[in-house]
Image (cartoon, rainbow, N blue to C red):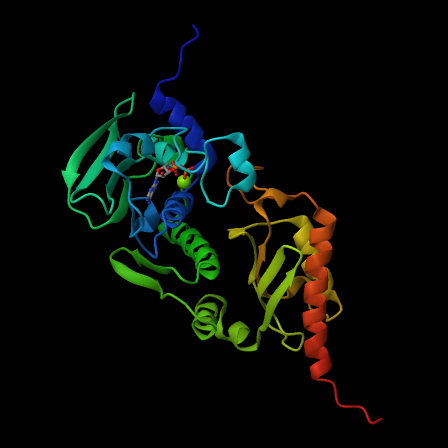
Length: 341
Ligand code: ADP
Ligand code: MG
C-alpha cells in the first residue's frame, strides 16, 4: 500500500472510537456542549435506547450561522485557544472533537439560532470530505442536535451496542450524575415518545433535597448530612450518609471536581477512611463536590476525562478526610447522651 492521507470522514471515524462508545457517550458530549453554552434547560429525546434517535434541544447561546461549518469540523473549538488556557479550563469541552466525531458515525443535523439572528439555520456534513451544507430552519434561540442511526456506517461498532434497555440504563445513569451536580438546570428525558425523567430546576436547599431524593432515593435524602466546608481555596460541599443510617449496599457514590464526576483512588481513599471509624467504610453513600482552582488540577489526562491529577494530592486528600471526619464526629457527638458532670 502507498501512503495516503485519510479522508476527513475516515479520520473522524477513527477519532470517534475514542469518544463515542455508545449512545450514552453521545448524550454526554452533546449535553455538556449545551451546558457550556449556558443553557438552563436541556431536553433529551431518544428512541430505541438512542441507537435510532438521539435529539438534544437546549436554550443556550446558539451557534452563529457563520460558525456552523466550524462546529462540525475536527479540532475546532470556541473554548480554548492557547496551551495556557488548558491550565484554567472550566468548560466541559475543549478538544473540538465531539461534533465532528458523532457526525462521522451517524446522520447528524445541527439546528441553531443565536439571540442576534432573526432566523435559524441547519447544518449537516456529507460525504467523505464531510462538506458542510447549511439550510434555513425554524428554531428558538438555542441549539438542537439530532443524531440518527448511530454507527449506521460502522457496522463493527454497531454490533457492540447492547439491548435498548441496557443502552437506556447507561443514559439514565449518566443523566443522574449530571443532574446531581447541575441543580439549577431543568433536564427532561423522553424514551420512545414517553417522558421518563423530569428534573425540575432546584434553586434552594429544599428543592435540591427533592432532586437528591428523586435520584438517590428518599432514604438517603432524608437522613443525609450536609457538608459545606471551605479552606484556603478548597471548597467541599454536598451530602453524606449519616453514621446512624445503615442502608443496604448503595451505588450512591458520586464525587465531582469542578463539576466533573471523577473516579480517583486518592479521593476514594480519603472518603473511605473518614467513614471507616463509623463502620460504613466502603458502602457509605455520598454526593460530594470539590471546587479547586483550575490550575491546581489537571483534567487533560484522558479523553473521557474521568481521571484527574491534583498537583498537591496529599493536601487535597487530607482536606477531604478532615472535612468529612469532623462532620461525622459532630453528628456522632450531638447524639451522645449528655454525661453528668
Ligand atoms: P468542544 O466542546 O470540545 O469545543 P465540540 O465538537 O463538542 O467541541 O463542539 C465544537 C464547538 O461547537 C464548541 O466549541 C461550541 O463553540 C459549538 N457548540 C457545540 N454544541 C453547542 C451548543 N449546544 N450550543 C452552542 N454551541 C455549541
Ligand atoms: Mg464538546
